[in-house]
Amino acid sequence: MTNSTPSYTDNNDTNIVRIFLIRHGQTDHNVKKILQGHRDISLNLTGIKQAQQLGEYLKEEGITFEKVYSSDLKRCQETTQEILKLSNQEGLKVVLNSDLRERFMGPIEGMHISDAEKYADKHGRGTFKDFGEDAVSFLGRLQRGVNSSVEDATLNGLKNVALVSHGGAIRGILGWLQQQDGADASKIIVFNTSVTVIDYVIPDKKYHVKSVGNTRHLGEGNFMVSDLRLR
Image 1 (cartoon, rainbow, N blue to C red):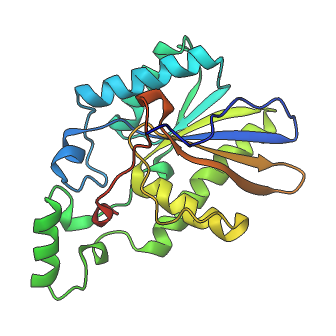
Image 2: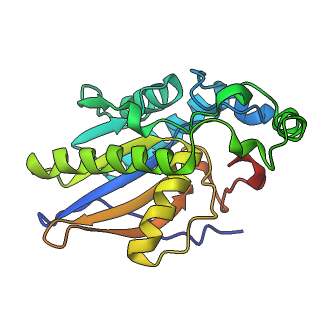
């Protein structure tokens, strides 16, 4: 199966800030379907390799960033480090922002998803998603994180920046932008180290989703998360 997702390039238009929205690499918690939330989990060997593959791909395609905005959790920081190392962009400024974190999941963090479902049922909740950070607070935090990053990029005249975040956070961001752009992406859970491209048009003060969940750097085929319970 060939990858039908359009390739992406960097941006040279001074009226646009191009955002390369990247999900962190794989962790053991991802593999075991353990809910991470704000738990500070490192990448596993596969996750490191995925980030390195993305870095190599960026180098081959000649795509460079002028700044990186990243969740402050280790899995995102480590992903950023490997990407920049393999794309020869070590030393690039990285801004850590806790607003780009995954949703806080309260007492179910660290549970296997099946155990979290049982816990919710035991406590009279319809779903384990009823625990932790509520949807309104989560989305507000994500909007603040994205908007503050883009504001900084705009003020500094940057045209190409990376945002490194998490699966649930990226799904939330896409759901928010869907309302502006008509992009039907809110039900997608992007794969580890996938790249979603979003353009912020400065004169219009609007975001436009250009492509979602690109995984060309990982090989042929479209890599997607199949277990929708995870978000």
